[in-house]
Amino acid sequence: MRFSLQDLSKVRVGILGGGQLGWMMVLEGRKYPLKFYVMDSPEAPACRVADKCFKPDEYKEMVDSVDVVTFEFEHVYEEALRYAHEKGKLLPSIESVELKRQRWKERVFYKEHGIPTPRFFIAYDAEEVYRTAKNEFNYKCVIKQSTGGYDGKGQFFIKSKNDLDSSIDTIKKISDVFVVEEFVEFDYEASIIAVRTFDGMLKTYPPTYNRNEKGILVYNYGPINNTYISMKMVEIAKRLADSLNYVGVMGIEFFVRGDEVLVNEFAPRVHNTGHYTLDAAFTSQFENHIRALLGLEIGETKLLSCGGMVNILGLANPPLEVLRYGKLYWYGKNEARKRRKMGHVNIVGETLEDVKNKVGKVMELLYPNGLDL
Ligand code: ADP
Image (cartoon, rainbow, N blue to C red; front, side, top):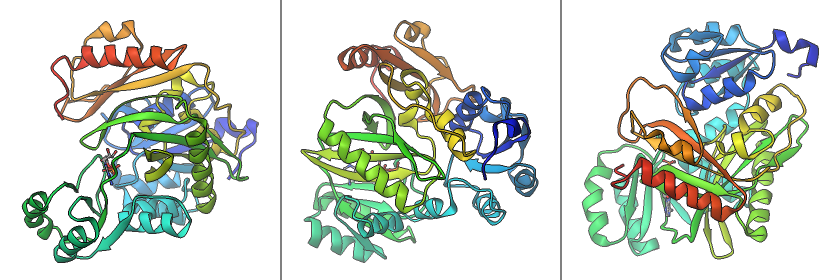
């Protein structure tokens, strides 16, 4: 599906999911004469800025009334995703969504495509989980449920026999396939945002250092100042996106251990670690995603400055002193719950050191008593 420039004002882009990612997609897409139809409840952030909002049970109507369907969250809307795929409107394609439905499939895909990932085994029940953890990892491992896993849900971090013994009863109650993988003693976590066109052209944003806490991104900043590591990430992004014949933006998360770059997971959509591109890059990840979906030329991904981002988690009323150090993006969600992403602060700076310092200041302002996730 490609559009000429003259056609743009007639083009309707459908977005499944009305959270902050959809909200930023719409806001960035507003630079073009496009229409945005969003599927979620009316008070969802992206619905508030959309041209039209559809309830989840109206998915057929929504898909039928747009030219292209994308999504901001791959773990729900199964029927809508499938329907959009059947209608030939879904981008990125259903293949990438399906890899995310089952964590073990994603890991196997990496292995089959020569993409480095933590050493792992698949286990079909709690007994097998126990045996694998004991025999293959001498207990030190991470056990991950295959389905429904995001933001650190369904994960067990095991360091000792004791940990395993106290988790195994919970694991027994879960009927799912598990991935048992090595507990990576990484130096740091990182990610890269890539955008790929219909023609197979790929551009990447400079990778960032990421800080996750209890499975949730707290802040990130970049670019990573190690060319060798960054080049490896670009190579991996190319291999992954090419092997999926991917169209749009994807985020890939890594563990970096010495010179080793291991893929933890990828997200077939715009990504939280790419929010900094709104201010530090010439073209944001959100704009580039839309450009890629429509078959338009994708924009420059080079950075204009170093950049970073701090998530505002679970706070209804963050101190506005954060504006001293950055730019506030407030999603306008109706209720602040623990761990919920309410907004973020984007930060730019001449040097990485400068950005890091500002990230530290914003963290102190937002979480004076430390983070409670
Ligand atoms: P989700 O898919 O729920 O977002 P991830 O698999 O990305 O969860 O894991 C969330 C976080 O947990 C990671 O960012 C990392 O900090 C930690 N983690 C996950 N797997 C491992 C591992 N094998 N070794 C060490 N830490 C891990």
